[in-house]
Image 1 (cartoon, rainbow, N blue to C red):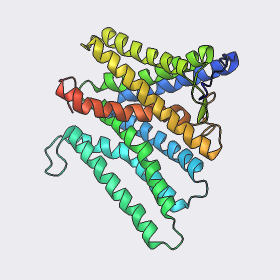
Image 2 (cartoon, rainbow, N blue to C red):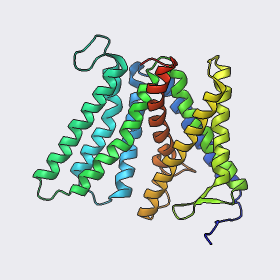
Image 3 (cartoon, rainbow, N blue to C red):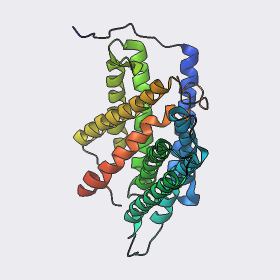
Image 4 (cartoon, rainbow, N blue to C red):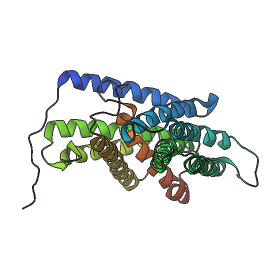
Length: 302
């Protein structure tokens, strides 16, 4: 019979919990401040670019510690530039025959940046005797893994009602992660993926879902947003699923590299990727959802 992987809850260690909680609060407050500032003085693109830079460094150190510096530099440059290029194109207020205007211009500029960056890495792999196709492929994937979601967050912020939806992205991920940590520590007995991430449990997963759903129900009411209850529940569930996938993917990377954390920058969490993994997946999912279903229902306008 298959193993059910039942274990005793790990419990909460007071000192580590306080450190983790304070770090997550400071991180969320800074992130929210940048979201509220938005494209004014390029505050949000600057912050997203910094996150992309630090995240790319950690990603390359985990996946390919001996990667050649050139593809690593090109990949980092692509990742960092995507939020900036998207924000700059979004400022275009006149109709451009190639880029269009507003959010469409940002989206098309993002596509062009990825194409040109990919060609730069392809050229390096093709013409350099000491190059490695694996290095170029990992460099591009790292750039897209960090750059595209962070550029998506910039695009969400610049939508009609973007302050609300971008803030909800950060707050719902924070709620899902916090509730999942508390639920898993206190009640987690049934492990989801004991080989990839031994600490993740079904109890923590559903606690995280509760946190995300509550945030998506309560905050729209507080801010006077006309958001249907069923819509709040569905988005809360989707946020939880995306956050879980993002978290599990990063855990898989660390497991394959035999490292516990992606870095040491954030006390109680580890590295930037350890804190950002869920946000990357949720930002991408919410941008896709808002730019399709949200626009069709008239909730947002790019």
